[in-house]
Length: 56
Image (cartoon, rainbow, N blue to C red; front, side, top):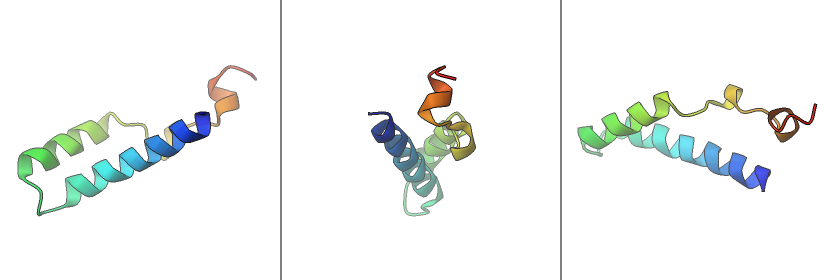
């Protein structure tokens, strides 16, 4: 299940990036997508499950 969660985070982040850059979307929606992205984990913030679970 951790792989599915990671994939979902990556896809959601890509969706928010696309949404925030799409000029056909209303400005309020783009602004909210951008605001959410500021607090969204980046690819470099995501660690392999073994590191994040405290197994090491």
